[in-house]
Length: 68
Figure: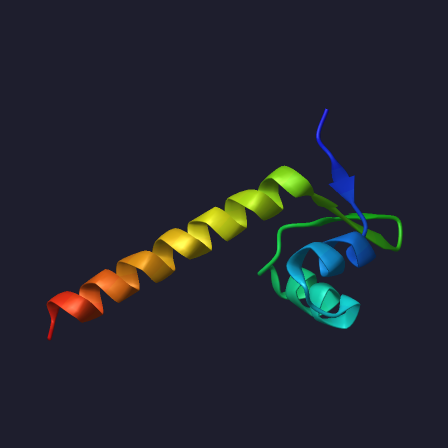
């Protein structure tokens, strides 16, 4: 069963403000879903986002290093 997080828990986990979590969720940057008027987030998807972002950052660094 997936671990479901509240916006406050995601904010603590990602070290950002709760308002930023809401903003990113509304924009689709952070994967989440609505339960009534409340946002909820699957921790596994948040972790996948972090890993994917790190891979993209690593590739960008490698590309810039090889272009020098």
